[in-house]
Image: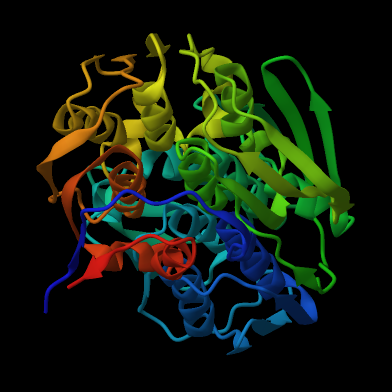
Length: 443
């Protein structure tokens, strides 16, 4: 079966409203916390992607009863550390680093040994950054070279710990936070700024958490507890998925898009800051706060003159999933853009900094890349005429979708492999992009 698409036509100007699928980070976190609650939790607009479905399958193997029909999901939690499962089970996190790392925090108190595995891409990623702090709670892990598969053996009496997270990883921080709930004392975390969805969910559930925000770090204290109440949640649209349509609009003259009910958590809006610096107008409408998260409709107009950017690395963590798209903006800018301290990009589903440079090379955009930075020499007049083939990118969904945006805005004849990669995070991507008028041949 062929698993590629072809694009040979730039998208025409459009004016559309769009509803984007539910936030992946929130969908996974909701499911994990709902599994620990006492009673039934319900979510609406839960993202129906492979990463979320892997989360639900792992929880089912751990004895949690789940119903998922259309966009409504019910999870019957057994309470904190009350997983009920057979001995010698294997959990498969698929492609999801969020699931793989966070569920390990819940398993530090597991009574029987568990094997955690993932797909080819996830099995290349570093898990020492999670096992190292979780070992301090008393759990034991067996692994080769710090990667999946991992044998997990929990402890009956987890200790509260002190932990410094200095990479800006919300996954590592959240894993420790979940483990801390099962202790008999106070866990103290010093965490470099990163996504705070877990903290906001803890606060909404009135869990014993205290947060002191400083300039570069957050100081978090979590006291172990005995009970979590059920949580009903209407999952807002994912800003990382919305980003593809935002950048498509920004790069398409005389176009406008209104994306409804988007999660604009400040730890996720680095792209919006970068767009403003580069001269793209994004207007927020119908702003509200929902269960601690900031939500708004995003109005974007395209065709603006794009300025180059000397990007502050302070923005990096809040735009980490969007940098491939940001590189496309820099490719259209009139001047040289510079991005630094991006080594974390190469620790994603594929080495994204390297792949960003490869895509620019194929497009004919001059760029200079190092192990943690890239300088991009923009060309606002670029019109691609040649054929471009994108393949062998470890089936990274963001490489695939970014290539689609490049094809629709810079021209050329593109053949982009592994269209099924979008199933991990945004299975309706191609349907929605075609609803804006994109002409795509699917094979």
